[in-house]
Image (tube, rainbow, N blue to C red; front, side, top):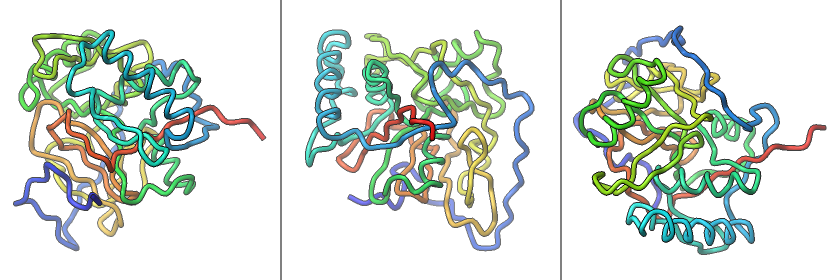
Length: 271
């Protein structure tokens, strides 16, 4: 199934050619976090596939059973056609935990933008998660939003002003029977907490071509790509679909289908 329209797109919102788009000024209160072993300068990109994909998925499934009591939100990945299929934020956070043992990580927004710019992979007809968007402690996903907001504020960041975007590669996952999905997201020393005014609810549909140094859209009226956001508050997922579109407004954090692909990153060899 080719993803052309976002699952959660608010249907009454429609961008029209020539419609003005407010310029975005880079946030002055952005404070970069420790990004651990991520090498942002020299990266190789690939799908999670072949023998490595099969091995990583086996290790992932063992963790799901052993540490997460077979939480249904994690039972969304499959191996078919020699590639791992499926995508949701919970699964990608746990996959990243496994991938770290193989010297790799799940692509962050900035990694995906570099991959697209280089033309390293053909991403058309696929989608893949890369981050979470926290706008407030409210619904949708109120339990998870409140839990994550508490952690974010504990690190000195504000919640409820500009949207906060956190790449999935910096999270850990914990079992929590009180959560609707039996899971909660946990910040780590590698978490990047990024103020993202582009993803505020006042920007439901915007055009863009390129991205800034955090992998977030730089709006242009005549852009060829589209950001679909949301008027929702709370917690939503951030995912790419195809090589043109970005969705920051999907509230269903557990949804996944066979068009999902895992884009993985590994430190390249300097030339």
